[in-house]
Length: 130
Image (cartoon, rainbow, N blue to C red):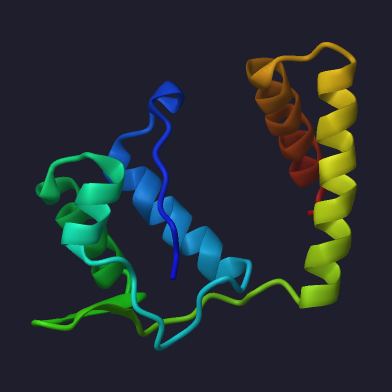
């Protein structure tokens, strides 16, 4: 089952962090159609947040057609995003992990790593290579 996490340092509202994590888990193939998300009660206990925050996130995902709530059973994945093929995912992950380790070893902090990644991503996308 998907383990949700929140990072208060990002400035991203908690409900959007949940939405992003579910979408990313679908894209990366960690969760699939038919899988159950943590119940609202489980998520509230794990994340120490207001139940309405989890409900808001799950409603957003339901609006996107990715999940469906089943009364008394939980919220289940019903939609799919095109996942990254496993071999490609593993190779890219190793490459990115090496890059991040090198960046930290060179003295970059989280903010600098994020800024550099965002800048490069924008430049590559603008070149039409994405």
